[in-house]
Image (tube, rainbow, N blue to C red; front, side, top):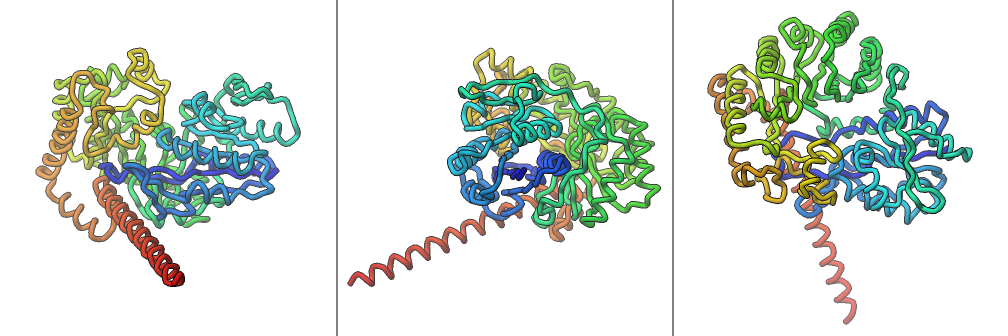
Length: 510
């Protein structure tokens, strides 16, 4: 059966003070791999990879990638099923628009949706768009079962993990499917169906840009892949794509010491000359001098720790298990052994008060003096269906609409706006001041105690090189400026062409 999988266009926020960038869609690459292994003919329409420099202004943010009309026109007429992914809920307005256009153009083709957004807000998604099926949670086994059922007409009610419309249009939800336990059995990602080079050439990578990049996953929550299988996959990408850099998309990749030891030794024994990084905000429990040394020797160049707050009180409410002692032990060990270290913070959590902001400022000053390289401070937003979201919902403080779903794209804005403030103890203006104060506390101390970093950042900016989040931010800012200028020039050229045509037409009337 012919299946077309779609990676929609995405939003970028040119006003965001962040190095975050859209990147290769791992979830879609996994689904493509399992469906192809099951005997289907799989095609990919990757809006971002196909047009990484095409931007269109949409309110106060920008769309990047193919337009929704261009995506629709690329659907092959003999396609039997269309699959659409969405990792981030902030992209829902674009994705919803795309789904409506797909259904209008291809009314007889079932539309199957999956990804973090559709799992988190299934009901809203199906209510607002003509979706036929939603695959919830891990999609590999469910996608195989659903596509077989659609191909030969099997009973949909017995397929775990799907939400669908019955013959009367009523939305039905089957029980959720159990998590995949033996993750080594999942085939490697089908990156050959994507334009990996387009992402690399345009620095559309997660984490720091260390040139030829392919993202990788070592865990599915608790289930770990065997270290050998992970290194086999890395070596395959080295040989197939000449990849040199592997950002791990895991939050728990280095949580088990025995796994880390076996993984790093596997890389060293094979003599693989690679870099790898942990850009997603990993936990710090096992990072000491021995673990940090193994990470560095095997090619790990950057890690990010996510204490979220410098306040023990706030972290307790967040259910973050990290303590100051564990955090500073990990940071000192990582810095001593030559790792680039970044820290993720969330400002404006609903229980935060000025005393908690002061605690965070104290913490970042100490981390800067230790030698931590970067801090990323984003404004709080509640993720749908989390515990804090439900608390705020009970208080009538959240409404599941477009403005709410788009909150994540504004968390790194220069200023917090009042409608995006969920903290009853401080105003949006106060939160903005706290953000700049905390970030300034970090970088002033960082450059004062480690003045060589200033010259490294400036020199790497000139060379277009990245070795830290600050350098990634500067390079991403330059890239956004270039895209904006190209978009302006294209509009000017289009406007000039239209005026010329109008002049010619007018001249012909006489």
